Image (cartoon, rainbow, N blue to C red; front, side, top):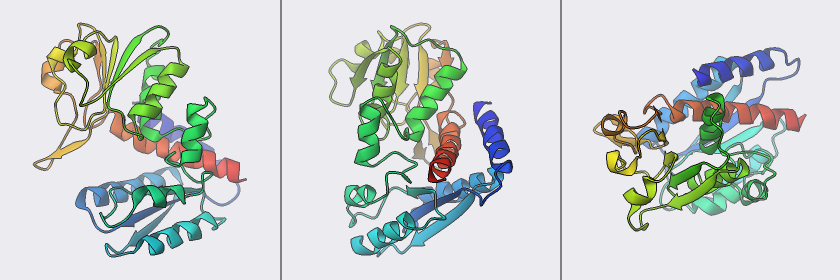
Length: 270
């Protein structure tokens, strides 16, 4: 499993470190149940590889000013290497303003405009964890992207847009689709590789996929206590040559690469 292999490499690198352990601060505002699960699993993952987790839990009623003050404190803390802002934030908070206050050198989720700018210019300082997971998985299986027709379904700043830039960097021909795309299944069915990142449980079925296509399911949707991807796995599995599972596919690798970005921030900090 790729995630296990990368975690072992991270743990080995940290074990050879003679200074303090790398530190990842995660800010969570409120107690959203799904976020809380990820919040705790993130801390566990840090501990397993030797990264020091620094959980910061703020009240649901925290003001914009209070959250930004906490971000500034972590920015100026020399013992903190990476900062994550756990989503979603309570509705009364302005997400974009808060994210932009994170130091780009500690922005291990690659959410700030500065880091996104570096990425779009083809010289990334950090790469967003989910797009990086997709690229890592393709590389692990020696999939040559040169000239491949890739359809990315989803245009978010977190996945769709940055992933498209990374795919272009590997000489793929990229089409970005979304909820307003006309004849979406027919567009998707032309692709050699389909990346589903639209945030709708099991929306992608056999009508979207051509025989032998590679299908990467980025979706994480909670329904009746179960995690479902954006792809209807049962309907697609016999058509695709490769299909990532949910759970246990891109999602598990994403957490691992967050740890890898933390190591990178730590090394740059020293």
